Length: 77
Image (tube, rainbow, N blue to C red; front, side, top):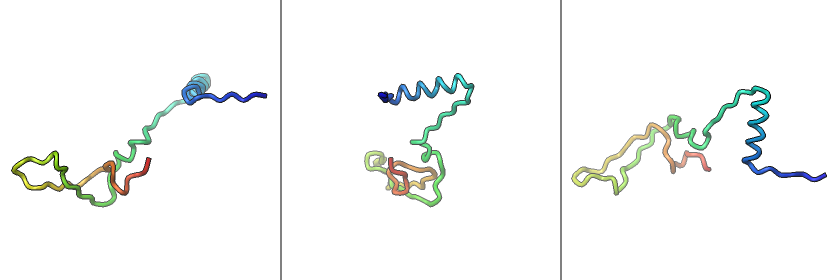
């Protein structure tokens, strides 16, 4: 007996076909960016980047309300 491996596209196509035949409800989630939509449990302050500073203004510091890429608390991909 020979086993055939399906590439990921064909696996999804097969799964969607099966779901359509059995009238299953299909839902989709975006897991990669889900943590950016959640609020932080701690207070985080970040300094404005050098390239975004306005000439005659002092350095600005921002209090983050939501997650930001690069935080130590951010999940690893």
